[in-house]
Image (tube, rainbow, N blue to C red; front, side, top):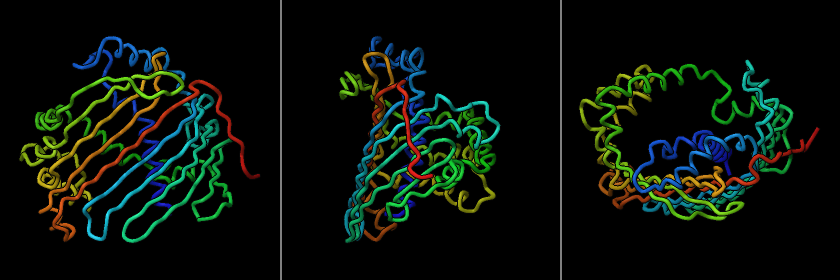
Length: 322
């Protein structure tokens, strides 16, 4: 299994753990379909009980499939476990090395993929303790390798590098959200909310789901006013990015279906217990024929399920090598 695959999984997982609360409905503005009792669980999880998220154990699964592509269907299965303790991280540190010195983190995952007449499988493990990172499995062996935690994050997507340009681009986008055209883009999203009993995760949970039909948003990208507004915040000095921006108006025709379900698990004790992200995309057969030569619809599905246990309990990791 190639390192780039694990890089994708790690970056996606870390990013979702960091921004999972943003996927939840606002407890102060409870949407239709969510009861006052469920809203209180959300309020407590992100308020009075938020400090418990400084440490926890976790398990996760990833299941993905792509059907209808030339050469055969593609499938991916990942399972993993680990934990994190940020209670000793210096949030006021001036550099990444000092900040990461207090981080304790561990993750191990097994993966298997099939497609194109090939089957692949592999395992990797990463541990971060005392400001150093240890990994095995990236080179296909069980030998541990030691790198600085900062170097590891640099490898996993440039997290430790110069992000000023990217943050400036994001800031430019956020600063233009009050543009009437862009507000129309986000307003095109159709989201419904529901609440059901969730899985047992150290006890009973409630599952709060926000289901969004992205098709209207993709169609709205073809609006000339929205395209013009986006061109003001998409960097034009990078040819690849500019080219991507020019393709955005075509997305409405590319996908016949584009849905995302973001489910957040809350313990009945008012704690955040994880989330599940489900994405379903269907590429139109005519568009697929132009892109891949295959005249059939391309069906893409992705499910990521993350569950947190032992909230607030110390999480320890041992350095595997000197």
